[in-house]
Every structure is written in C-alpha cells, then in structure tokens.
Image (cartoon, rainbow, N blue to C red):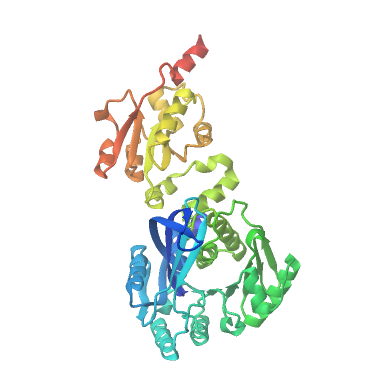
Length: 475
C-alpha cells in the first residue's frame, strides 16, 4: 500500500465548500429567561468542511489537490480560501460571488458531545451564466488532472447543467470521475465512472428500501444502469461498503474501530478511493483502503483529516503484529514530514537484553512528546561497539521486544556507530540520553538545538544494565 500511494497525483475536487466551526464549552445551568440550557463557550476552532474537507484529506493522503467551487465575497469566504492555500490546495479555480459562504457551527460540550448545530448558508443553484463561465474555466485546466471528484452537498454549485457539463467533458478526455451524491435527480449523475451513495441516499435515488446485502446489490445494480456508470459504491455505516460493477460485486466489512463521530467519514472515503484509483490501484483494493481510512476517521472528533501514515500503520499492524512499529530506511526519510505537527522524541541504543532500567527510561522519554522513536543499533554496529560476542539477541528480536512496549511508537535500525545521520533525517524535537552522559558530548545535540529542540538526560536505574545481567549469568 505504501508504494501504491507514495506517488502524488493531480486530483480536482468540485463541490460545495463550507467552514466547520466548533464552539467547545459546558452547560451547567438553565437560563432564567426561558427553560433552555446556557452554553458557556470556552474555545473555538474552524476547519475546512464539505468538499473542502475532501481536498484536505487528499493532501493528507499525499496527493496534489485542487479545489473548484464558489464562495461568498465575505469574511468567511476569504477565510476559507486562506485555509485552502495554507493546506497547499490549489485555489486557481475558486470563484467569489454574491452569496453567503456556508458555515456550520457546532456547539460541543466538554465530553465532546454535540449539543446543537447552527447552519448559515445560501443554497440556491448557480445561474446558467455562472455554469457556462465555470465550465469555460474548467475547460482551460482540466487536462492537467488525473482524476476528478464531484462532492455534492446540495448547496447550489452542482446544478444539473454544470454537473453534466463536467461529466461530459471528463468522459471525453478519459478522466475518471467519482461522485459523492445527494440529489434525487438520477440523470444529473449520468456518465460518472463511480457514484457513492450511502444507504439512505441509495433509497432516495431509487425509491426502494433495500435491507439485506442481496437487496442492496440488486438495487445498486439498477442504479448503475440508470446512471450509466461503471461502479456504484454504497456505504452502509457499521455494515461496511458494497461495490457493484457490471457483473461482479464486492462486500467489505466495516473496520471494527469504535465509532466516536461520523462527521466527514464520507469525505475521507472518497478522498482515499480517489487517491488509490488515480495511482492505478485495483478497485477492490482501493475500496478496502478507503474503508480503513473511514474507520480511522470515525474515531476522531469532528471534521478532520486521516493521514497516509495512519493508514499505512494500520495495514502493517494487521499483517505484522506489533512489529508494524519497525520502520525501514525509506519510510524514515519522510518521517518528519509525515509527523510535522507532532513533537518527536528520539533516543537510541543497543537494548540487547531488555531490563527494568530500559523500561523506566523509555517510559520517561515517552512523556516528553507526542511520538517516541528509537534508533536501534544493528547487529554489525553492536559488534563493533561491544565486541564479537554481542549482541545476545538479534536486531529483529530486539526490535520486536521494543515494539511490544505500548509507549514506544516506532523503532528503526541503523548500521553506523552513532545515530548522527539518523538524527539529521528525523529532525526530532527532543533528544533523550542517559543521565551518565556529558551533555557537551551527546551526538546529534547540535542538530536538535538548531531547530529549537533540546536535549533531555534521564537517570538510569542503579545496578541495572545488560552487562551486569551477562556477568551474573557467567558466575
């Protein structure tokens, strides 16, 4: 999966964008003016929502995303475009117009329970003249894209004329189109490569109420024929997803993670599906990965992105148990970029015979940041440092023991005598060494301090060492 998604493709998202604003606070009393709860606001955050969240998830999936939509020439419209640009989403096809930018304000209690949602929006469809102009703008740029997503939230952008204009133009140029549907006008989505309804939308589009997998497959196949599309992917919530093609179908069970918040799960699904298909991945595998990404999304609070390294980690964990935490030299090269918003803690050592001194040392190191990564000396490196009779345990055995510790996030093996080159690549925020080190002689301290980080020395447990254990065995 890692190799399949490392290539950044150019994907255009066309759809209704919005700002998702979250007010967090608490409710502790009833208003004296009326029998309603009083919400005491403590904090506020604002993120990309709607089709803009699809684009944000594409960036998180290591793709090159562009956004085409209309926003109001108002404070929220300019704020939204600013957020897109900050996330390095191409805004060349964004248009300001005379309408209010959609904003959804969610009031969240301290336990992250949503109390109320306030929507502010204009939902009338764009005019025919606006549709013609947008299609002209698209015609000039469309050939640079590998795939197009249409994300319909019924906020006015994806009128019948504009939607059909996009789909016809893309089909003529053999550019695949994926459509996240909302409208009940089936003909509006004709000639898409794939349409993605949820179970409720499938019912509204067809007028039928499928319940069993067999019924969903049958109705999806009918919808596929009505829309003249290659595939219908129906998302069924906790039941997973069902992909239907001309003859075959494919059922994917939901990734079994606890559901915390379903906001944005559909956006994540179609973003990862698009990333996989743009990279020419088999559609069944693409659906599996999109399903995993959606499962990770629903465990998060509110509208947010699922990052490529999170999906990679999940897939590796399923195949390799705890050893999924062991990352290779190629993955290390992008480690800083993949975790740019997190405080990285780095330490290194041989960890030949794991003992209580190591355990307590690593526990304390993990408390200093968001991610603890360990540089582990390879077998050849240990021999040069400790002698020909070391290590006692092989590098893979030592790595697996470290990976089994819940507070260790990643382990990587290096061959050099010192981790200097590894530290240069990882660029940690915190460098941790044992309390017996002279701070002036710690390898890599200059690299960490140059980027505003610091060195932390943690005391060892007296009398606990691999050498002491070996000597005791020899007695």
